[in-house]
Length: 409
Length: 75
Image (cartoon, rainbow over all chains, first blue to last red; front, top):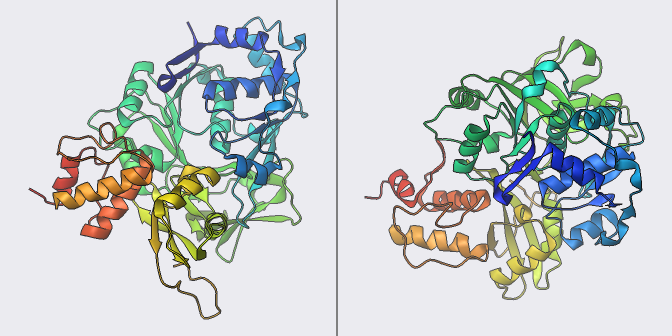
């Protein structure tokens, strides 16, 4: 029996036949989709493609408050549309894939990213911009993917489409324990894994070697030679690739180490300015609001060579806090904390650590005695878990710069 | 020192609305017995580093309480 998706944390194993059945029995489609069940998300993306309708993917842990800010609505339960009989008649896996490959331009997918300006950004991708790097070939057909991303984020979508359009099995690895991940790689003989450095670091230390894995891709965070060496040790048969990708532009560069060389096809479309990486608007997502020709990535790079452009990723220019690949905008968190009665001033900042890169912390100046527990309970209703400060300190005053701005470092 | 670790572990647990523990022993698994996820482990390592000036996760992942003790040279 050929597996479409397996998730041991939900005791779920879905065959391609079951997927086809479920598609044929689909009677409604909700274009605003929010679910913590990966299979449901995957299935609804297919439904949207078959219907040639836009799908808006909402993170399963968005709170009502966050949804309201992002979309103007706090619930989408009443948005379901009826599905006529068009989906029926998908006789087998190959016919389905054939149909999906011919997805028309009308289909698009919208996801959300935390914006650097404080307003979360909506990014819409077309089939073409999402599948720019999808490879389809005979040799790809036997791949078994270890799925190590959130399905509602850009990297997860790209891995999903790569696997789906080749008819591959997808095995969930994201959010599992180290032991479960090891077990799944062995039990399913996973051949391909794409993940963040944070995910890979969770797999160590490990005495085992995983010989079934042939391709390992790392992206989303800074990659270094130490991690490359550790991965080579764990996956001796794998080709290891580091990719540069962003929600707005998708995957742009790939490299075997931490140095990226811009390919000829992108010559003139990628440049460095004041240490920042700039991307030409023609490479950006389908309906990005671009008012300038060049998109400022906010990524600081070390220029190694100008022609062809060769660089190393250094850090984010902005103050975004990267918690294991998830971006937290300190201003957004500060605003929420500031709305608590008794909070006079607040500063949200990062503390680095070797587990997730950073955690969010905050200093609060209060006018009355505030209970830390009460603040935490309140924040849980307003923010996703990774955005909530892990360490809350009550201080007498916040440090400011000479110009009166909040001192961040 | 063990008491300090117990105190830090309980701060992390209680911050996430989990129940504090009374006793801690070296064989306890941070993920399985103490129910800590990556966010909890990240907080734990920051708090331990602030107290003992040692990054317990620096060269790989620590799985048990005993492994924390080993990093901090607690006999």
